[in-house]
Length: 204
Ligand code: GDP
Image 1: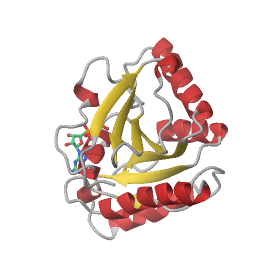
Image 2: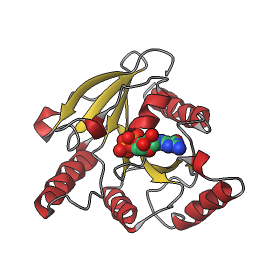
Image 3: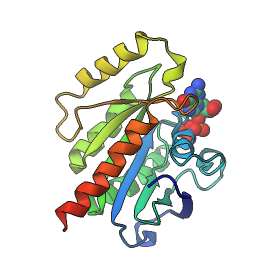
């Protein structure tokens, strides 16, 4: 799934620009600067593929990437939590994301990235609320694990597991990753491949 190239397909600013569904679609969400582009690059063993955070105009779009000979779409959701974002943009952001989350039948899981140094913040909680409301299956992925020593990073993981235990749409397991050392990436890739296999067997 991740051995071939991952390619950028398109940025979508409004729902009518959404491409037709793919066999498997997953999305990545997270606060700006959480390491989303780095993780996407690391998953695809690529450098410089996802540069959404530095590309003007791309930061408020749903950015579609394709992997696994176009069987897997990875949707990079706009980063949230920019203090300087105007209220109206927050509203537009929310409504695009909300409609996408509710209306996209092919979306199997949203991976919500959380900076391991900070754990789940208030802004992250708002995103998790949105996902619970939309009843979209989601799973937390701690990023930048290399910035913490053992056993601190394991403690953060367990705290995060406890923090989401009562959330209805949350997957109980939490991934711990580093795009710098590559830690946890194989487990995350395996989880995504499993989603595709599950989809294949569910539909015959
Ligand atoms: P995005 O805004 O969520 O797309 O975040 P980026 O991927 O652009 O990363 C934000 C900053 O965090 C950059 O300076 C990255 O080099 C750094 N970063 C991202 N992932 C990691 C990681 O796993 N470990 C460390 N130490 N730094 C990271």
